[in-house]
Length: 388
Image (tube, rainbow, N blue to C red; front, top):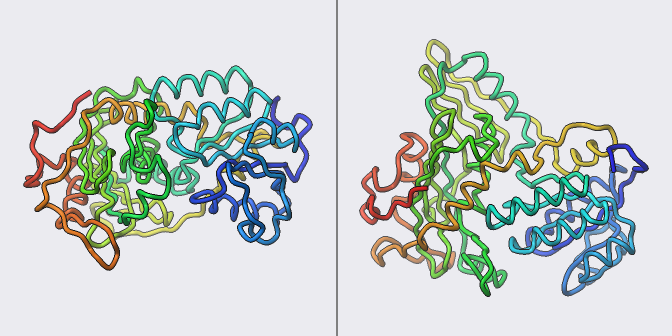
């Protein structure tokens, strides 16, 4: 199907995975339904949603645990997939083979091989697929690119990223796959760098214009965990790219959780982008600081525009090829090491683990493009660095 072929609005949509983060998609679909853009035709869940779980204004959509049958029954033109990471490829291809377009939550897949199967299958089916890196819908991204092209901060020397978030123990009990690297012999890779704070790396790549796997020439990772999980919750990475280094520090064990950001370092200044807030701070020689706020294009809205008017997709699968190199490196790295008992404490009120000093450590990675071990973290050493 080509854009504008037999597409009518509101576009019928099926949502697979309507609990957890899927509730955000329900609210977003409701917003677009009120605007006459889409119509919620069905919900795919193993256990059907009760009436009170469906936001007002969405009616009584059809429900089924079988995505293919639900797509056939409803005639949906778009499938929004917010399901466990290991299910992404098969469900996306189930939709694609029926000519149904896809909005797929990030990370697109748990391995690079699965990503190639996904991307090749989407291309063969001739449908559109949008990967759910919402930060790449921010109008700040092209604005920052324009500043860099104009030489606002001189030659770019690298990009840093910092994410100091908190997740309680219940976060890792929300689903059987949460905090797992693999389950029943299947890759999951639900770590801080690849799932909750994956936007940092993806956004840094987008600002540099890094998309293809060949743009990445090397990756170093240091993967740690304070929680009793398989995956990492306090980690850093440094990626060598054809356009300069990218270093990211991330934790889900922050002392004082704050907004994640990326910072572009230049010879004569820096640009900081708080991507969840669409807020940009430009600091450069000879000028006072300049702060701006930007709008954002919703990715489902953009997908509808792509199908109805031919507007360019903001995050098609090829745009995430380089990011999937990072996922693959994390997947194949040695399992994250547990932080020593003295390196973390439990907050009984919030029922979560905290790594003292980690907030400053994460920020230092973004500022210096260094790894934890290079910054003198007492529990980190270069021998724990995995290089690909």
